[in-house]
Length: 322
Image (spheres, rainbow, N blue to C red):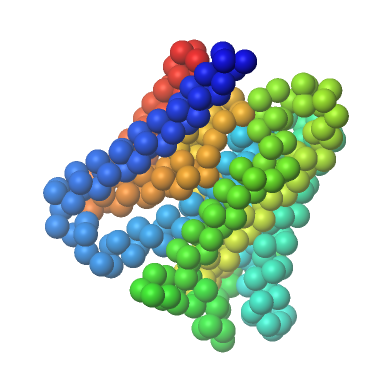
């Protein structure tokens, strides 16, 4: 019994240490870039960082659930765009109220996640292949529904306030991100879905033998991830005042990177929303700081890739030590 309690404390300490290290890395990056460039701490730049993190952060929060189950979702970037395109069609082409457009965009994302979950849980298609297929499907649907052209919210400028309207000086898009993170943290740590998400990621077969309907819960997790992608799509479309059908590809990599850097294990069974939020800020601050220092975009990608590889390697080492 004493050994069990000791092991539990060790596991909790390990998670906490991972979060502390990620937060320390974020502070270090902020200090480095603030010293390297006086433009880093300008108000416009800080607001830009917050808004950029909002989109990637919401995506990362959604994919954290999926990665904790031991899965992956390569489609969330184009699913995000699909949600924004559907919202644009509903609001501008069908001229329905904005709230209906927002709900339609989120529902479209959840539907894509549901299809992913069914393909993976029921049809036994590997997550990599199932979500890669969904990425191609939604990429095509984005062009079909939009007529291959951007959908502009010219006649509905109120839509732009979803992301930009300040509340106590904070853009609404950032508040949506933080609220999404709080809700996700509650779900992951305090609900049945959260407990089963960790159980499936730790040992899916043991979870199934213990009576958990792993197929149904995996479908629920992928649907939830899709819903968060839909929310990110709404924030993105509001920020740009348009739904860009060609946008989205590549966002999934930043979201996965944020989750991994924040301590979510690609092997499944471990992860926190707080760590993912910190990871999302690390990705955005790093990209923003390198851009301010005029580092070419190709080298920005190289640096981000190296950091992701390093984070995964540290996770492997940590698991071996445990």
